[in-house]
Image (cartoon, rainbow, N blue to C red; front, side, top):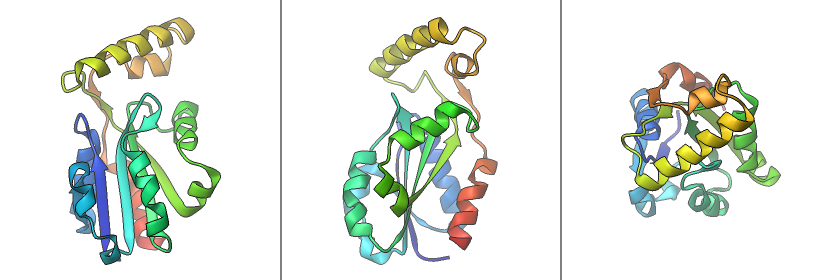
Length: 172
């Protein structure tokens, strides 16, 4: 495998968990978002960015997208974590809406189901989630997969969800 850097932004720990699993498997260099400006991209052939979904956007993604011209010619990918199961139309739509067609040509994207941890969320995030739950209850119903996925803290993270990302790293 080539020299790889993983930069990640994690509010409640799920994205950090996946980034650490990637590092354990690949031996890549790992950088929390707070250290992003210290990364010397010239040292890496492959650069991954990871962030959690917050209100339909991937945390910290704007910064990474600004770096894409600098990363031209490198193998690049984004992994996003969220509580929605990976095989749902909502997860696919959320991923696509975060990237322009040009960006989709330059980088590979991966959605990794994780979970929610209401205890680690700040007050503003808990409030937004309660508003979102109310909206989902009205529009989708209490029995909908989406409503159930956001109703309580849970952790569905699994190393198995990284299989496609690891295959991509190894085989491009």
